[in-house]
Image (cartoon, rainbow, N blue to C red; front, side, top):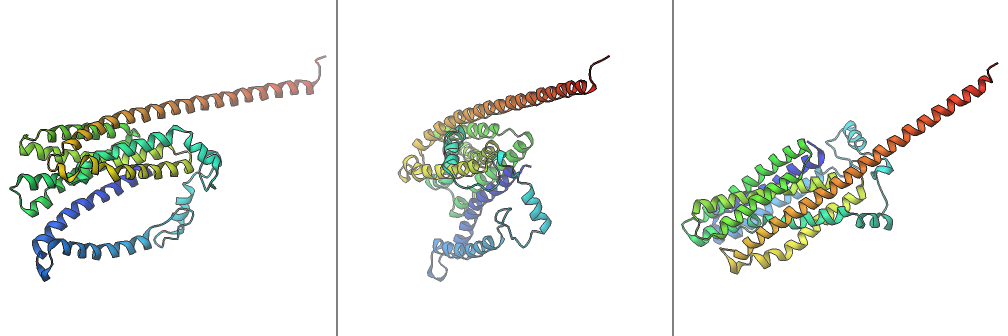
Length: 337
C-alpha cells in the first residue's frame, strides 16, 4: 500500500468511526443517564465528550511525529528517522525538499490545470456525503415513527459501517492497481441509486434502509481523491501542499452553505431538494473525474514522450562522441604508408 493512499485509508475510517461511536454513545447516555442528577441526556453527553476530548488532545500533542526532517518523536529510532528522511527525493529538479515561498512558485501552481481540477473535484464530490453528514436517516426514522430513541441513535451506524468498509476496500484495490477514478464512479453511481430510492417517498421501509446504507459508499472517495491528488502532484512538494490545502478549503467553503440551501430543517424528512441536488452532484463528479483522468493521461503521455526524446538525444550524443573518438584515434595513428 502506497504511503499517500495507505495513510488516507486509515485516517478516513477513523473520521467515519466517530459518527458511529457518536450515535452509539448518544443511545447509551440517553438510556443510562437521562434525568440523573437532574440533567437531561444531552447535557450528560456534552460532559462526557469533554472528558474524552482532553486526553486525546494531549495524546496528539505528545505523539504526532512532525516532519521527517525535524521529527524528535520518542518512539522512532535513529535508523527509522534516517529512513523517513532518505525516502524523500531531495533533488531540486524533482521539486522536493524545502522550498522558500516565491511568486514564481505561486505562478507555477496557478497556471497549471492541477490546482483547478483537483480542488474542484473534492469541492464537488465531497457533497455526496450529505445524506450521512446531515443525519437524514435519523430524521426520517423519527418522522415515520415506530422507533425508540435508542434505535434512532443506533440504526444510522450501519451507514458508517458501509463507509468504513468501502473506504478500506477501495483504498486497497486502488493501491494495487494505481488507478483511482473507478472509486469515484462507484460512489457516484451508488449515491444516484440511493437518492432516487429516497425521492420515492412511498417506497418500502426496507428499500429506504437499503438506500440510506448504500449512501455510505460516498465516503470511499475521500481517501482516494487525496491519494490521487498526491499522485498527480508527486513531482512538486510546493504545488502538492497548495493543492491539498485548497481541496480542504474549497470543500469547507461549499459545506458552509450547501446544507442550509439543500437540506434545511424545514424540508425534513423528505429533503426533496437535497435528493435532486445529490443526483446533480454525482453527475458533476463523474464529469470532473473524466476531466482529471484525461488531463492526467495527457500529461503522462507528454512526459513519456519527453523521456523518449531525452533518451534519443543521449544516444545520439554518445554516437557522436564515439565517432569523434574513432576519428581522433585514426589521426593519432598517422597516414597509412
